[in-house]
Image 1 (cartoon, rainbow, N blue to C red):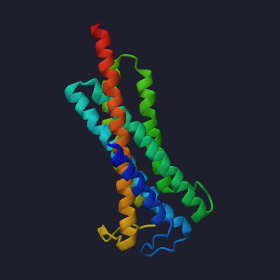
Image 2: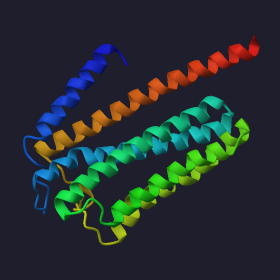
Image 3: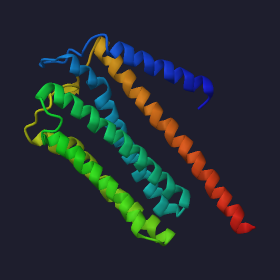
Image 4: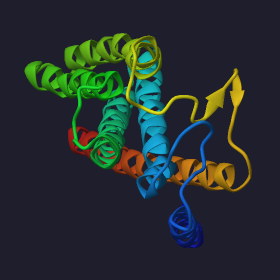
Length: 223
């Protein structure tokens, strides 16, 4: 990402934050306070976390197919970024919970689900630390991430909608279609684009570092 693009992203994200605080999102069928503004950040953070976990699964599949150590390292990198965004989504959700329900944590189905996802993907790094052989570690890690991703739609989308939740319902999708219009839609999807761009930039930056480290190790082995 060039310096101009980075600067443009910074200005764009700054504009999203400013416009997000002009007024809270008037979502259908809900009573909203100023705390509702966090909707513009909380949901995109959770979405990008899911994208990161999906990316880690893709690189895990590629590793099992090609046995390229870089694929294993990139899968691990994407999990790290996914955990960061997942933690941010948890924190912003806790802030909203404190404003709306009087407590930072209520063991709401959605709060519990995202906590379980955090534990599942945190356990991935415990697995990596427990296996010393690099090839076995990469293989076990790849299989784990493929299986772990099954939990993402289950805990992230299905179960929170099966059980009664304190969370506002039909905030984005209502009747099978997107229920965001005008000002709210513009800010929400702009925020989504910003967080995706931040993830893409961090992933590519980390990927270049991994590639350089791997190339350096190859040169040392050859020497």
